[in-house]
Length: 213
Image 1 (cartoon, rainbow, N blue to C red):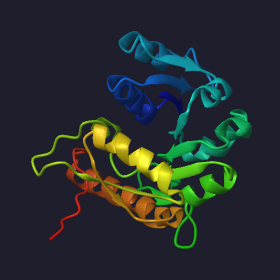
Image 2: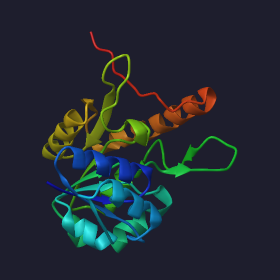
Image 3: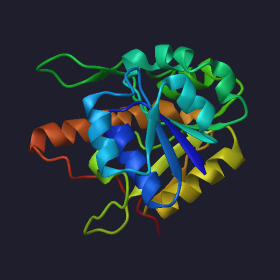
């Protein structure tokens, strides 16, 4: 499958490597497709490609949104919204406000979420929130002593969530479906919880697991 990843940061590059590992074609979109970090990524992942946001959105049969929240709307507008119509979009973003020396906070919450905002920006797409509750180093083939962790997802379209669950299974995750995209109101604060634990313990090697009886 052709995977278009919008955003060339740590998350986009890590997921791009993972999709390539499992046989997908990958294009990473950026404002600067010839940036040094993308040149380095392409050198290590020669089967991948890079392009503009528009080229990447047109290329992908499934799209991954991996931008910083402050640049998310602009990236979508630069991608031409017609390129998203009818496609599954994995939303990895978190609407974070980052202040130096302080824990991050959320720009949206309680009665709205970043996931819901992305779905409003992309009314003709099927947005699925996923990959936002763990660091990029563990997004593909997470290896923890307690066994595979759980990725919580949400979205309004069952078929889109099934596609994302298949990807998560291939990447080594258990998947827990929380229902509609409004579930992002809970998943995005989980990112803050993940960050706070990492800041306190000075370790970023942790993930969440749902215990069932």
